[in-house]
Image (cartoon, rainbow, N blue to C red; front, side, top):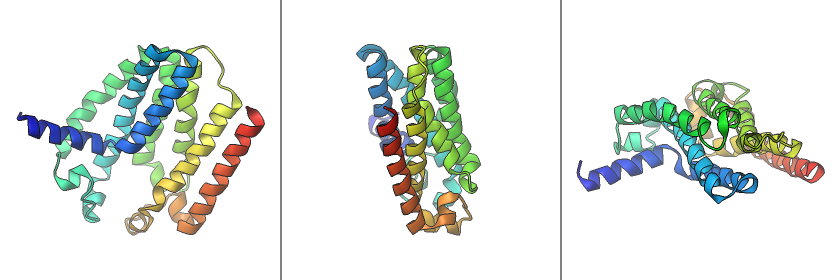
Length: 222
């Protein structure tokens, strides 16, 4: 494969992973891992988290391909033709078992690794099911609670209340914020998650209230 073509496909894979949010979640995992471990294991944990986020992003782009094509979302690599669905599917088939191995056999251990992979399963469940119903916020809440908690569990520490509850609340807020930009197109496609049912204005209010509640939880419980 020519170098330029290989780099184009690599950029397509990264873009299909929703690279901005993927990088943010990976950075958050490194922060918590650095707190409980030290730099070496923290980078290994962050790498494992990164592989899990690839699964969520890639499965989302594959499942949404037809809808993205319908709405001419040319910034999506599958719609733009940067990569093909078959190419992305092959990478996803590789990454699922690889991510399980990387997380369960890494510093997170079996218990911490399973908690993190549960969070990943919630992300995938959102892509295929929850985004269409009123409980669309639930996978975000569970996944964001699992992310920091899995690191604490890896050190045989019970995750404190502020960690899992704050994660759940901020995760729910992130869901409402994330949906706002595509809400009109989502409604046209029959996607009826909680934000789509509430509308843009009410979703902004819901996100603001959740963020305020999350801050309050942190203040009270830390």
